[in-house]
Length: 248
Image 1 (cartoon, rainbow, N blue to C red):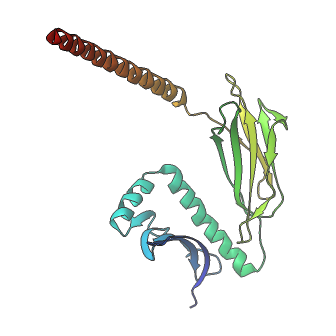
Image 2 (cartoon, rainbow, N blue to C red):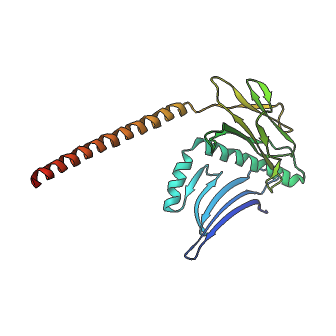
Image 3 (tube, rainbow, N blue to C red):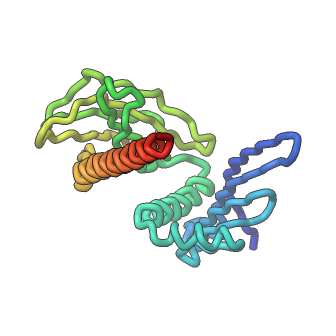
C-alpha cells in the first residue's frame, strides 16, 4: 500500500553577523485510500530545525515538543476559533484527496473571515475586511451590504490570488464610519455554494467598555502624576525656605 502526501512549505529566515534564525511551517495531508476516509492532516512549525508544535487531526489537538512549544500548544488548544479552523482544514484535506485521485478539481467551498481593522491614521474612517480563503473554481463574488442594500462606495478588492495548491483567496475592504445600529454584511457568491452566503459583522461588545477603561486609567494616571508633582514642589519649596532661614 502506498502512502501519498500533499505538502505545503512556508519558511522564513533572518540572519545577521552574530546568529541566524530560521522558522519553517509545514502542512501536509497524508492518505492511502481514494475516498480519503483515512486522510490525516498535520500542521508543524519548526524553529532552527527543531520541531516546536504540531497539530495532528488524528489526535485532535496541538502538541508542544519544547518548553516554549508546550506553552504555545496550551494557548492554541484553548482558542476555539483556531481549533475550528484546524477542523475545517482537516475536512479540506479529505476533499483534496478525492481531487488528487480523480485528476480533476471539484468545487471547494471558501472559508470566510470578516473582521475590523483600525485605521493607521486617526483622521481616516475604520475599515472592515472580508476575506475568502481556499476556494475553487477561481470565479467568486464578494458584495458589501449596509442594512441589506448593496454598497460600492469606499470599497476596494484584490483579484483572486492563487495559493499554489489549486485553490485561491480574495480580500475586499470597506471603509466606514460606525453609526448606531447599522447592520453591515459581506455576501459571498461561489459555485460551491447552493445560495449566496451572508456574513454579518458583529462589533465586539467589550470595545466600548475597553475604551472607557483605557480613558479612565489615563485620567487616573494623570491625576497621580499631578499629585506627585505637587508634593515634590511643596517639599522642594519647604526645603528652600529652611535653607534660607539657616543662612540668615
